[in-house]
Length: 432
Image (cartoon, rainbow, N blue to C red; front, side, top):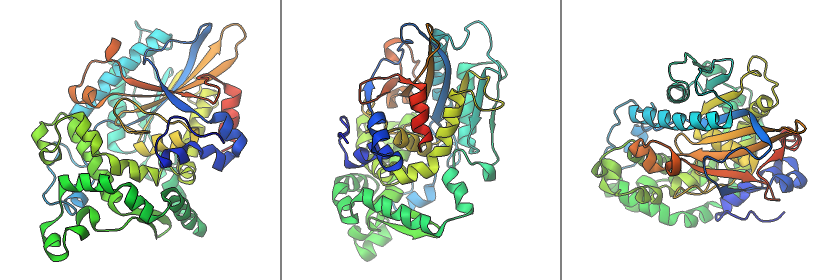
C-alpha cells in the first residue's frame, strides 16, 4: 500500500489503512484518501445537481463531562460551567444555530432546500443520540436551518440506542475473546506502553504544568507519581472491555474541557487556570486527547465495532433504502466525537483543518455526505467532506458567511477524485 500523503503521526497513518485491515488491501488502495482544503461554499460539479445529503455531526460546546474525576487529578478544583456536567451550554447552542444558518444557505444554493418555503419532516429527517446534549444540538441546528418551521428531532431510548453506541449495545452479549482482541489491537497501535510514554511525554508535561497534582498526593508520593503521572500507559481488560490506562484517560478530558472553556467564551483568566491567551494555546494542550483517540476510536478494529451500523445507515439513506426516511432529501444524525472518529477511520479520511490537530473531531464538526446526479445520464456520485467552525468562530458566535465561512476538508481517492461513483462507494462500505 502506498503511504498516506498528508498524515504526520503514526497513529493517523494506521487509521489510514483501516480498510486494508477490514476489507482487504485492494479496497483500501481504492478508497485510500487524503483531505484537501477547499472553500466551504464549493458548488455542485458542472452538469450535476445535489439530489440528497446526509449529515453526521458532533454535538456543540458542552460542559465538562466528569468534573469530579478531573478534580481528583488536579491541584485545584476546576471551575464550573453554567450548566451541569455534559450538557450543551447556551453559548454552544447559539454557535450551532450559526452553523445551521450557514448550512441552510449552502443547501439553498445547491437547490436542496427552498429559500421561500419551509421544508417539512418529509424533506428533512433529524435523529440524535439519546444524550441531552445531542438532543439540544439537534434543536439548535433546526433553529438555524429551519427556524419556525415546526420540524422536530427524534431519538431512541437510552437503553435501545444501537446506532450511536453500537459497541456498547454489543456488550449485552459479549464474546469472551472480544476484549482480548481489542486489547491487542490497541497495544499494536500504541507500539508499546513505553513507546507511548516517550511519544507523548512533552504533552503530559505541558498539561501537568497547567493542572498540577493533588497536594496531599505530592507530599506523600512525589509529583512524579501523582495527577497525570499516577498511572502508566497501557491497556487493561475491565469486565468485557479493553480500556486505555495512563495519562490520556483523564488528560483527554482535561484537554477537551479547556477547549470547551475557550469555545464557550470564558474570560481568558478563567481558562486553564489562567494559562491560555489564545486559541493556539488551547491547541497546544490538546495532545493527550489526540493520544486517546489514536489508541481507541482511530484503531480500525474499534472503529469497525462501533461505526459500521452508523455508516450503514448513511449508505442506506444515500440509496433511499430506509423505510420512513427514504423520502427525506436531507438526513441529519447528531452524535458524538466517537462517532465522527470511527467513521473517519472506516473511510480512511484524514484531515487537517486550520490550526486544529490532525483528524480532530471538534464541537459541532460535521461529516457531510452528498449525492450528486449527473443530468445527462442519471448517474449518481458521492462526495464526502468534513466541515467545522474554528475555535474563534465558536468563541465569538461569529456569523459564517463569505470569507468567514467554516473550515472544510474534502475526501479524495488515490486518483485525486472528490466524486466517487455511488456503486464504488456502496461496494466498499458493504465490504466492511
